[in-house]
Image (cartoon, rainbow, N blue to C red; front, side, top):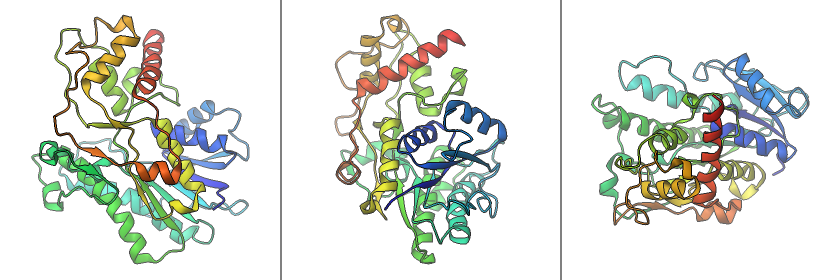
Length: 350
């Protein structure tokens, strides 16, 4: 498969900007989908040599859950799209009244892009790539019951629709939204019999350097915000934060996987877990304290050299990503050091 023209949604996001950077470095032409003109302007300033050239143009879609949301963006008669990469997630600016209002937009945001390709660009698009989540794979709300299970792309979070609607636990609803959105994509593919194929990616926590400009540490994405707020602005004698998700990946490796899947025929109709391996809160603390003496008094010390993960902690098999896509994962220290350098620099200038 020879990808040359890509529609990329969520292009100004933490993961999206890494994917955009690598697509451009491969010489591909990209239409970046963002929610507002101001976001397009900011993204153009991040990639000034590509913006307003055949390599990079923009489409504005304020609401990706609206019917026919992508129809206009997918029109490119002079240079039709052959690949669509969907990283965007619905963004709610209001509190939801019930979990259904949280779940439905997640599903709609995924199905709208597939409907758009079917209706507008099915004659040219050969592959759609969707960024899902490890939350669609594993029952993260019940980590203790998982034990030492090694997850693969064949696994699905067992959460039910009824459990997802339980108002007592919005966290379960979030994880369920990832599952049901990805399931909706695969169901679409089975039922619609379209001419393009589908690839999905299920990353766990994504820690690592920023490709886009962040002027305030308040604007960090959730995973990197966790590193800064819990590990870089605490106290040496504070308790270590909970481990959270036991697995991580670097955004550069996740972006590489997306680009490779756009280029490699064998990736079609596969589901990839993109995970560099396990990581514990103690390891994060040890790496930060070792490499940044200025953090000694503001990073919880814990018990250096140990692991705070349970004795039987779940993991994941990323072998398909390595063997099919050629992904080579950054080491933990490379990931966290490059991130912390950026965060400290933002801290100094903001």
